[in-house]
Image (cartoon, rainbow, N blue to C red; front, side, top):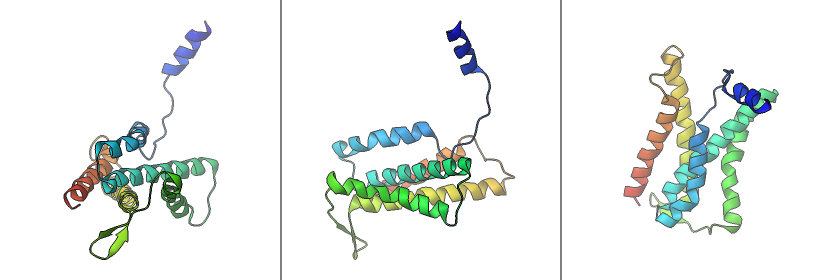
Length: 165
């Protein structure tokens, strides 16, 4: 009887709260990162997706803080910067910092470069989505637009970084 009640409660309609990103996509990106190096994906391209993953984690922390009522000046920027900065822990023991030259004068590690670029692109794409949704009367233009926009932007950036390496 108890199992039946639990099963019925599981299928009952409940209020759904919007998440800033698709959790299944987030887990898939996080789980795939170690595999990319074994497959020969350039570090800058893998870093793009790492940066987007870390930005998503920052957005989830902001959503958690909103639920708790924790608000303070600069909170969102601080949380996002701290979330993306966690890439530094990878350099403590797992990744060797080996800078490469970008644009002829800018020397930075490819993974770190990709991470920062991926986080910035993800955040800008989220802002673009909010702007587009506002201009469309508060509605998305098509289903899953919030997921499709960042994935397309990151895929294009991945292609560009792959060609330009």
